[in-house]
Image (cartoon, rainbow, N blue to C red; front, side, top):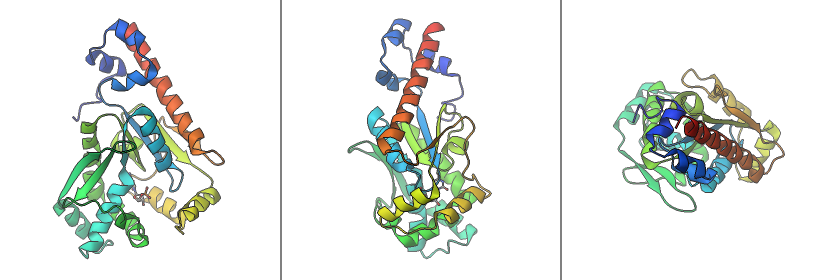
Length: 259
Ligand code: DC
């Protein structure tokens, strides 16, 4: 699993055993079957539309959606349940080492992963104000980030991925060719959160996420930056889908040339 991306895209397509003729006949949407699995990394600031866009992209391309923020939130919730002090990095790391989890992929409008704790998915609980306040502390613990990175890479077992978070293109899948960074004006992001019924100091959260020592929020090298202020989700996800299809088509052409 570890070496999945350790070769060039040309070699990757060769390994997929598509013949030259077959590659030439492939339509962009069919390129999603190429091996190894493709990872679309969508990072960005809070309330920049990452989730909405990532879901639309996953649905359009038939990829599996992975919400890594939900994974950190699940650990934060678990710590609160177990009365672990989230300001105590050692205690949080110990809780992370000990918890009993299972990674599954569920079907629906689109396929998505879930991290179950003792066979339970705390869907509602991870969105409470209490969990939201605890999660940046948990996410700042290096041992937790190591654990999460390993689990997030294990998601490759489910196929092509659209993974959203803060460090996916920079840290979890730095080798992927499909990196996007989303942002929007602070006023617009604050409005979006308020529309969801959540009041949050987003500037403070962004500052915490980008200034922590372990895998901080940053624009990953080679990422396409999308500022979606004033755009509809259909418009911004359309940009991502078009860019992915363009790169996949270029990849297939190059593979056919070397064929
Ligand atoms: O995207 P979100 O609001 O659900 O993320 C919850 C918290 O987890 C937020 O403080 C950022 C953090 N996070 C992170 O540090 N790395 C990720 N890959 C995803 C989320």
